[in-house]
Image (cartoon, rainbow, N blue to C red):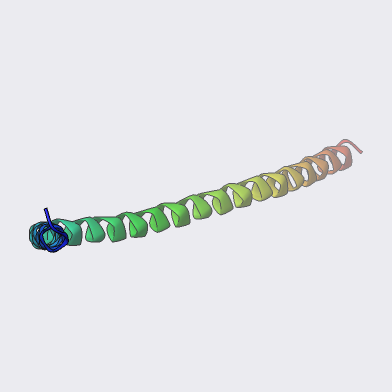
Length: 90
């Protein structure tokens, strides 16, 4: 085979591959768009889940802090009750 014939075969092969690629891209376009939309949706969902975890953690910290405050208040009430009992007994 001559050099020109090889060039023609290579050019034809490239044209066939390019045609198959173009057809494949046209067929796959709706699927890739759906996949992109699903990826965006998953990103939004993961951001919402992350915000939910953050709010849960902050609520947990607030509950821990309020538990400590309640313990202090209960101790003060116990002290007042002890003082009242002591005053009543006098």
